[in-house]
Image (cartoon, rainbow, N blue to C red; front, top):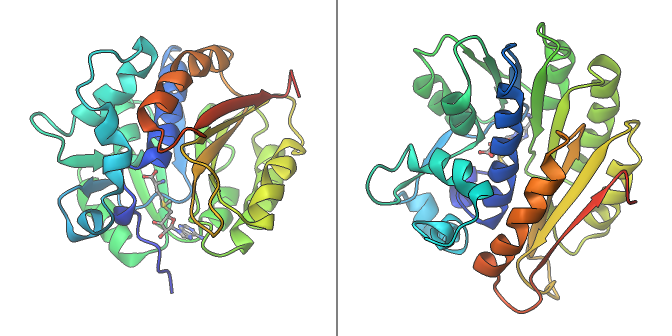
Length: 279
Ligand code: SAM
């Protein structure tokens, strides 16, 4: 029984970091004329109503996308991400697109989306949203398992987002195990692995484990919005990128300071990027 619902968290600071990096990587893949696959192993519901009872209960978007909305000082490198959100909000900020909606909006006719989800309500939402989109296949299954059948994609070009809830500690080791398999099947894919910054031993060891994956090039990007609390709350998040586009590190450097400034909840907010080159 899955209890996690992304609707409680849609548009928070972690979504901002994750979806900004997602958009930058998708734009990079689109620079070539050749089609590619977007694979989301933990897709969520696709699109979230920020006025829903889920979103209103936590109001996490107020500490995320709302802080970036309609700002005149935003750096160019964030423009495509903000635009991706604006596509669903012609007037006021009312909806927040999850990773499947962002990808579907950016992908071209020849590109393909494979969205894996296990929660029945999220699967129904995805099926409804993409019923008429022939590029999209919604797969009811376990994302870690399904990746075995989905990789390598027929086009041999692709972006894989792994974004489990980590409510079960096993998710950490399942990602590591799945990534070892993924890299055997599709060594040159771009992989985005999202993770929370929280006070837990499993979480703190995780970055080290990701950095030991059998791949030559990676970036580990972290955005802390607050001082680590005494208890278990999330104080930031990270994205581990395997085979990052060569321009990505520079792009991230030119946007992260702005995100720290806008999303900071206290003076301990900071960002950092580690890479296979400077590690
Ligand atoms: N990627 C989405 C986005 O950025 O908009 C958010 C995904 S949310 C963090 C994680 C999702 O994974 C939840 O919707 C949950 O139901 C689903 N999930 C949990 N375990 C799963 C598994 N083993 N396989 C596929 N989906 C799973």
